[in-house]
Amino acid sequence: MMNKHISINIRFIIVSFLTVSAAVFQSCSKKETYDVTGDTETRIFINSEGRSSLANLKNSFTYAIQHTVEGSTSNADIQAKFPVLSTKPVSSTVTVNAEIDNSLVTAYNAANNVSYEKLPNGFATLTKTSVTIEQGSSISSDQILVSVDPSKFAQLTAPAYLIPIKLSSISSSSAKISTNYQTAYIVINTKEVIVKPNVAATGMFGALVTNYSAWGITASATPNTGVATQMFDNSTTTRWGFATHPLTITADMMETKTIGGLRLFAYRAATGFLFSNVIVSVSNDGVNYTELGTATNSTMVNASGYQYIGLYKTVQARYIRLALTWTSTSQRGISELGVYVQ
Image (tube, rainbow, N blue to C red):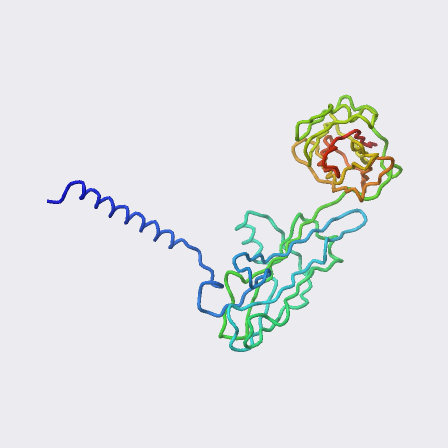
């Protein structure tokens, strides 16, 4: 007779084996497959990162347009430029065609929980949409090139746009277009910039506030020196100091004002310890903030240690939020904060 304990152990082993087997089968059945890396067909595909990084395909080109009263500019020429590749050397010369397919924007938004706009017709320049992979090669000898007309920048006022560039057809039946890596994207983010570079005190709108006593001031970190009111005591030797940065401070002016500029004095600014970066945002309700732009050490006029942040136009708001970074690694203090109002 089989020992009772041995029988129980055998049953336990069998049950465990079946459980593990089922888990493995389920895992395998859910495993995602990619035609570029997982089949025997010669696949034509896009990989803007190059053949060496198939595991980290990033077929997107991201740009930013900023709108000011002086015009609309981008951080670079807005374009997608890339070769087309094949998983194996092609047996005969292949011509590959690409096109802009705006129908993909809706599906992209739904899949990624975003809300890109379609680029209006006529805004993109289809400079090069047909390339050739020569026989025996696995990369095209030329590149797809799609760009956006700079003269149209001012008309792009939605927060963000998406331009899908899809491989649409090939000339050979010996290869197939990848279904996973068939599309590249141009992403365009836009914003209105109100912060104006290189504005001196004489270029500010309005005059400095003289009484800040009713204002409420908060910071994103606990100060290690001084109190907030020392930013308004007309002394550049006192400070509201902090041990870390970046730091965000928020001023509640208690009523809506017409803001025309800012003046800052970093602790020990006279000896070169300045603000290196200031992101300015405003709000009317203290919850929803609009970023006006970024002032840097090189774009803020420095007069006797005071750094000035000018605006292209006045803005109305109750709350001002400043994200501050210092040039110093040790002297992180705000000696003076001044706000120009009309």
